[in-house]
Length: 197
Ligand SMILES: [Zn+2]
Image (cartoon, rainbow, N blue to C red; front, side, top):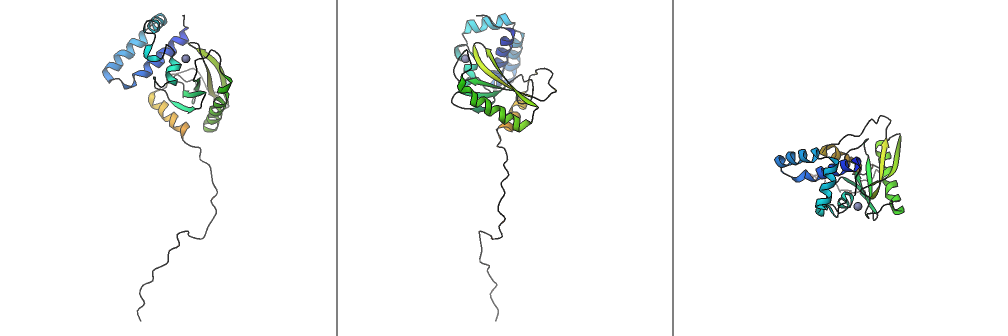
């Protein structure tokens, strides 16, 4: 097995994502350790540990199984959509097939389209790019809203991802024209003061 440096940084990213529930003092120490690992060390680490708790070595399978926390924005029977931790732009998402396949299955198309449309409506980018990629031999689809001012990927904070997730998940407000009614449904019978003769 040989991994590219892009794959290595993905793995680092996801390992770091796992630290969310660690106590603060340990977290910074481990974060430092992970960040200082070379690509070769990352690879050796995966080999050695077979990433047992990470589900047979594939980070994306682990995300699907919810062994690694992620920011999920949609799901269907064939895949899940999560926010990219190192986004190029606002709303950059990954559509991960639930099965570990080397080719993106056709069944992933509907979720991909759903997410692309959702991001389009929500954030009004110039366009949405859809790319098939493969990391650790797990084929996935990247959905990237393009606003025209993209420069480079940068790490999003937990807070940013959480609020973005909420923003994407909240229902789109649909204006319903309520019929103008003059009749009060709860028609109360007015209680008149007793008549004084
Ligand atoms: Zn996988």
